[in-house]
Image 1 (tube, rainbow, N blue to C red):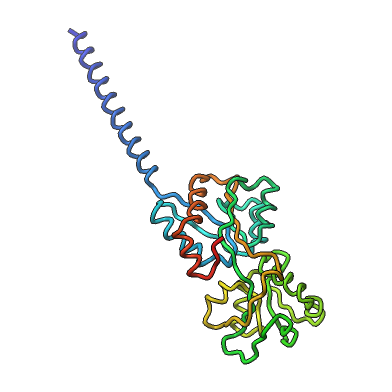
Image 2 (image 1 turned 180 degrees about the vertical axis):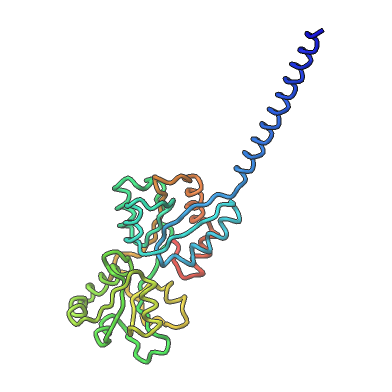
Length: 267
């Protein structure tokens, strides 16, 4: 009489085990689907002058991909050094090809991910209310203070130095203490806006952002290295597919419209 009871008990245990396993598998599948549908996030370390255009791109990109984009903006050189030191990021965007090449040589960039996606123009900006408006580069010698980015790590500062050397006024401006160096191009813009300096050398897109400044003149292209924006995916990125998707978005017509609206040139 005990054997049927034992058999029944074993049968119940087996049924319960199958039931519990089915619940576990069902929950696991559900969690897996949730994880797949959950939005991913990537981080982009980008040149300060791309702030508005990349933030606008991130909004459109998330709407179509469900991937959010966080940013770390600064001077290209400073960001490259941070990445070299191990700062976690997925994409690097620089206003100077030199810094992407620098990271590539250290095997920190996926080589095939390199993309040049925009161009810009170097200009001289002055306070909007200024009555003293230099007509060209050599007129800068008549001003007291001019702000530029530090050429050591700020691309706009490097281009500014090249342009001033092209017109053979760099040494004289340095000797006379006319140059105020900053940590990035946006700090140059702030110096002009607040009247700390009489003029600042920035990108056309920076000058367009502020009603507190106006463009005095543009530097000719032959006076400096072309201003180009280059990007690449980090070799250490844990979200390479998502990062590559964002880089691919920078080649689309939708993004090109954003570039043009904000004063950038499409390559």
